[in-house]
Amino acid sequence: MGTTVEVFDGNCGRKTVIKALRVSDDALSLEVQTDCAFVGKLAAAIGSNLTKMDVAKPFNQNIIYKKVGEVMSSCVPCVVPAAIVKALWTESGMALKKDAKIQFTT
Image (tube, helix red, strand yellow):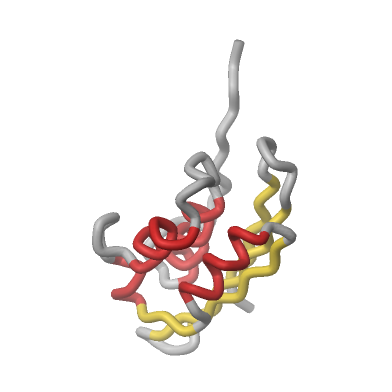
């Protein structure tokens, strides 16, 4: 079944659908569908086959965030990288399947 996350960015209006699937105890599959060229480049750089250890590493060693620094340097406020990590962590059993939210208040 896997974990599917939809991200609608209020800043740019782009939509991204992230699908994470646990293939085995240690292997994860990642699929990213997006109408954003930057996120598309990020997804290609990350690849579709990951291990649980790939995504469990700290920020400075985590493959997702390392690739963000390489291919998405101009989209600093983008929430998609965090959503990718959340989907992969959830699918691997390291995070709860609960919504995350950023909400501005006056």
